[in-house]
Length: 327
Image (cartoon, rainbow, N blue to C red; front, side, top):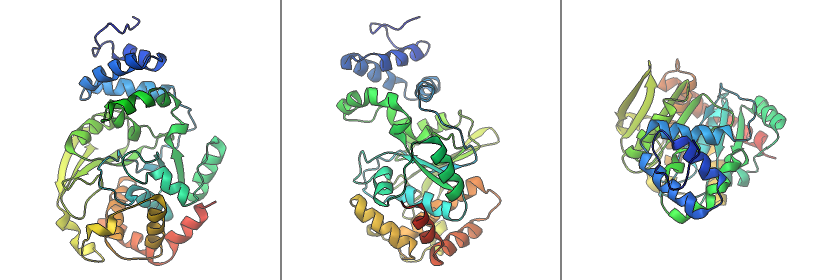
């Protein structure tokens, strides 16, 4: 049954409403539909219907399932360095296959696409070149808007809302290479629970969704972090104290060491990290990277991962890998 703007959206007709949303050019109609869809922001079926429609109409490329994505939601508003991008680059330097996707900054000064561009890391659009880069370097960066043109159709109306909508929970779940492993940081429990409903139902091999109790959308070294994961067909939630990580720190935790600025500043700090600089930026990147590493290599202990990551940073492995990725 074709959806009419006069209809009230229900779980049953949500897919027809979503189709209408992307087909109409009427901003008022689009805003009415998005407003109503927001009422279903905790509804598993509606969330999956929206995600499925966006992916169905994407620019598809050959999948690389055995890969890890570190794309998170962003939006914590704390203006930190590009931690998830740093994690992705560091992990790929020790052989973890990374299919990192992301976008330009929305609420921060430097999004993942911004820093990747400033580091002169190639962002390919051609399918063959993407796969060639991935095979050569265990890393490829995928700029999300290049693969999901439908999202441009609702970009203007989303800006009019000036607040988060159901669409803010779609991006991190739409890896163009269909990576089967994901390390996904978000900014609060509400957001984590919504994302858990999506990831639990899209056939990933393993994932960690997390939010920190200090507001960071990273695994924090300053406060406890709550994790959501799928294990033995069940959704599990667990909170881990930052006290667990104390013995791994290279210096006394300092929040100012992870504060970011513009893409140039963040890129320079990442290079310093890869050259061996030791401070809280290094510590938080390593801790986050360990959890990503264990997703795809579950037999490795926390200490084993810690040693490998430190070795990469202290023996020019990470910085040489970065140079190989640059144009």
